[in-house]
Image (tube, rainbow, N blue to C red):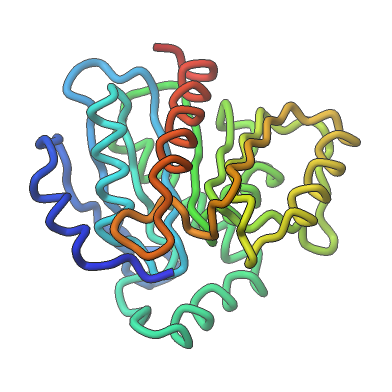
Length: 246
């Protein structure tokens, strides 16, 4: 879902964080991430994976919120500087290219993680993602990179396990934050993932917020649900404390 430009004002009015753009190259293509540093010794590092409209002011603001909470945060770029995301067709093409090329998806996750590690001295890591980014987050959890993080959290994210993949029980804790009125990612998807995680003995927690639609955390949008956003952010904050300390 496209984040509204009104959110840029919220970013400008937010408390200043030690933040910077980070440019990097993967397979000859230029990417730009965003790093926000905690003012003091960080309690840990949070890797943020963006929604299907790319890295926008929304993820930047979330990174700065995390920095204000005492965590270093890095919002990685999954699309590259030249990938258009202005229309629904653009966004479907950008995400579809990665859904059908999981090897590339994993290379981009690894590249973003390298950039995050290059910026931050924090030891512990938690990965979070929104919508498309939630699917990417779970992809990392299932991959051979999975043990590099203490936990994985998805906000109204894609939950389907692709053909040929499975949960093997070695993955760290998983937190799923989902809207009960989400018509894009259904409660059946939630139940299926729960069954898979339970069968594999992966530690997990699922919170469902009644009446909350898909993309319920997106500030300023028609789908924004303040109660669900507040409660899910608190659940995520608790998850960070449990897995990173502080």
